[in-house]
Image 1 (cartoon, rainbow, N blue to C red):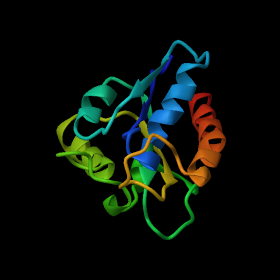
Image 2: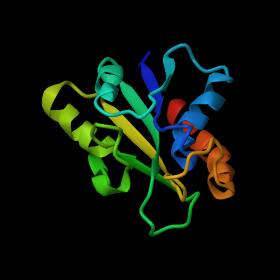
Image 3: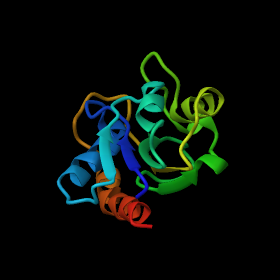
Image 4: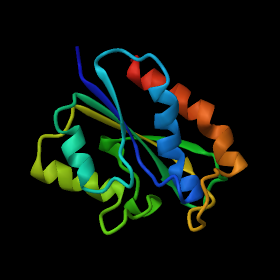
Length: 152
């Protein structure tokens, strides 16, 4: 069995930035295969590297902000086709997700496959636990995409 880790990144106190953590909360309530570990990665950063080093496959959910697509738009990338690092918010006092994965390539053995599911967000500077309606509406699509990745 291949070990799969699902990491949700974000800060639930900063509105839409909490989308990754909201997905993790939903997944934790589901019965998943024993080889799947679901992790609340908080604001991520370099700590992600220690969580993923012993995994065969990794799925990371995070907020993205391009301003090019409407809030709630769902993106899927692999570590072979990383988007520009400017799409991802900076972690507090740390690197953003793309830069962290690039560092990981240099300093450790990376999982065979890394999939990043990003959700375009609108509100990340306001202190609130609420997601905007557009981002909230994307939750079922994101969860479905994560489950397809888990069972593939």
